[in-house]
Length: 255
Length: 261
Image (cartoon, rainbow over all chains, first blue to last red; front, side):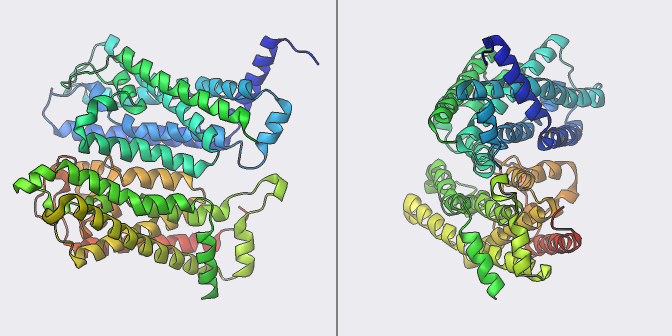
């Protein structure tokens, strides 16, 4: 059967989207991320309210929970690729779509389609909550900066998700992938920043720190080493590298 | 006893267990080494405020290994095998062989405790030797009471992970929550800023068994939030109470729940 190339891609994309949407764990992960984010935003807001009035901006506090939020999106990315390998779903997938490179890249595309709105809604909800609670006490940023920062945050979360999906496709088991990624984002990276300040400039080019500059509010008193655009560039580069490596391995390896 | 041996052998032959051992044995040493290098100058000059915590900080952050151990011990039982091998779960086989669910749970908890204690002893040995290697004569003496505290902290954490996973049956949620919570950006530290009640959370209470022996320790990482709140003994008791309650809840839920559900 000969199908035109564009038609093929739409069909594969539809299939990948269908698989993702019907995965119950994905919805659970997104729901819990949303709820947890609101709880954390509430906690950070009440910490902020105790502080001196007028010193902090809404964005700083509303996005303080980003550090935790990324865990939900890491889980999302890993679930998307690793779910193929629990049970023999991968063999069914490859029987129906015998083009491996195509299949994995469309999977990332489908994941991005789901992640972008989810990340935007979740990041916005945290900032909005802080906004309504702290309107009187905190510095309210201009609407332009707010939108820019939220877009940056969405981009960062999406890139993190795609990176996690690539790692998941490389490792093919949920638990090791989860341990490696959470270990890097929450333990290795913060600890090296604290213990080895001498190599801080190099750390800027790692995916999480580079991504941090994508949404870091510009009013911060730290020296911005990377501009948001540079940060985006570097984390996009990392994500693309990992996706490419994943695709290469995926094509070479026995399913 | 035979159930306990069986659980030990099941646990040691898990496919992911090498990761737990690797992290548990070496992560504390690496963190302690980094910390020692970072403040070597201050210690030699005698101005370090954190001398009493050198090395122990590695044991504090290094509990990831036993968290993985506790989570894997339970989640592997509930992992559905592929449809090509009839989609079974190990738990049905386990409960056919050991028909008393309480015995099964106790044997498994015992196996997890024993392995985490052994892992902690290995971790202490690697951590102490790295600290001595880097700091030489300036290395602080490691007291037995605090090392015992660290062992208790590790085994209690493993049991918390174990009980938590019995409730969720899926390894992802407990793994994510507990790993983040034992890192620098812990939920408990955040909550402790909001309410004093957070000092009763298990990890916050338990870590006082071997950290923060000085009355006010201002660390660059954590700031003044890690002020001392308990004595080591009460901290341990609070954490132990959490472990007992969680295991009791897990036992009740496990006892009432249908295996297939």
